[in-house]
Image 1 (cartoon, helix red, strand yellow):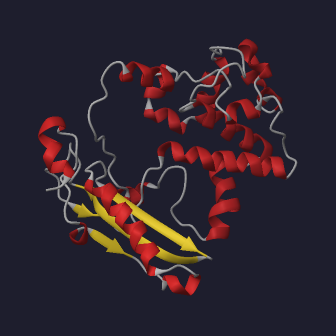
Image 2 (cartoon, one colour):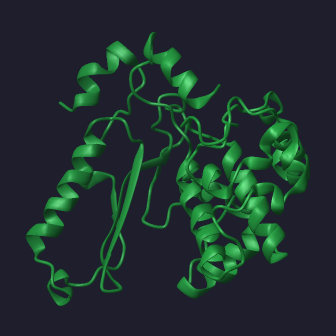
Length: 269
């Protein structure tokens, strides 16, 4: 019996896992020995992945490992829909190595990389004030907030404005920037570390767009996607590919006090 079955009755927020061999997919893989990896290492990596799946915390998992430019692991486990705690009545659809997943905050690393690329090319410096590129951002004492402060979650603006609850706001980036520019900092820049869950990315993205004269998507396409031959990695997904995206799922035990309060403070929500 899997872990998820043993504790499911307690929390009701775990996935009803299946035997990995019944819900796995595999893409094209080279012989690991051809790139200096023994089969035992590959098997150990995959065992760890299946162990994570068996916890019941993940409706689906996908893993791609490259070595010297060659794919040695390209596999998937689980379902993209129909097996999460809230959609068990839906038709089950197996994940594949080509399934699209929402990266959420992992996208911060992409924005940060583009900022560092601009720094490397001398288009900006990390210790430049954000207001040098976004003058309106300097309101309410934020004129001393640097790009480095935003990158390191020390800009003093972790609070998520209530207007962000409107998903349609994502289609109005100028309005988002105006909200953040009008926001008063919670503390002086650099004084405290606090996770900027949603605020920092929009500020950094606007800086890159101002410097390059291109949208953040276009910069990423030209600098990352096209050179690497990626066809899906992007900020957002086109409507015609929505059905390829794995359904988001909340799993695991409920977060109770006092941890709930600590997390809310950390996320500024």
